[in-house]
Amino acid sequence: MTNIETTVLELMEGAVSGLKIDPEKDRDKTFKEVGIDSLDKMMILLAIQEHWDCEFAPEEIDKLDSFGELCTMVEGLPEGNEPKS
Image (cartoon, rainbow, N blue to C red; front, top):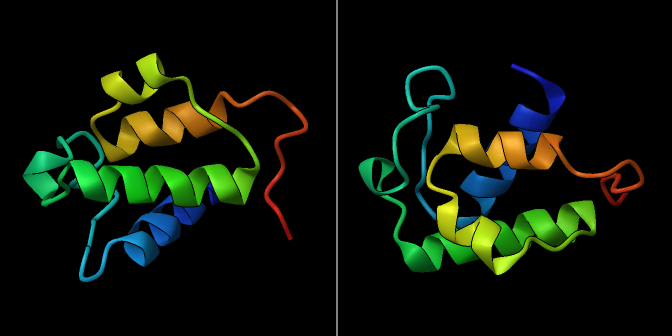
């Protein structure tokens, strides 16, 4: 697992009480399949945007539906969007 995947996983589990994701088995499962509803998704995205000091466009958020997709989106952030210390 990459550093980004580890951080995304920690932020997801911190944002959603009781959430446990296996990054290998659950990488491509939909959020719904792993028990994440729309409110959970927004809490996760807020945590990620705050951590990386970024904003995602609404059309990006609408298409986002798995841990793997979320990691790919974070990996694609422009240089300079470093995690806050």
